[in-house]
Image 1: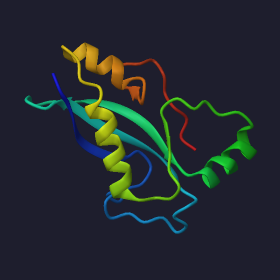
Image 2: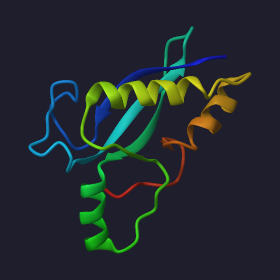
Image 3: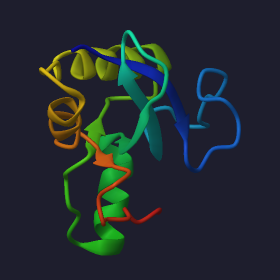
Length: 122
């Protein structure tokens, strides 16, 4: 079974990410939610990830001093096409015999909607 990225949206930015451009592209951070499902079926499940730049992460470290890195994708600057391309590649590598196997692999790169963990929104 092959997983497919079906949708990507920000949990913090109201505008569509494809149309969004931050004021400072190399100082960006936002939680996103990706919808992933089998490539040959309707439906999807959600996985949350933090997309951020090193500058943004440094500012967060000044506020919090320690940050958990799971579910974090670090980019040099905001670039929608690069981000989507990277996530599509990572999702494609999570193929398995069945959906539970795929979901388990996906939960290594993002927080699965059925996990009992709610990432902090900055």
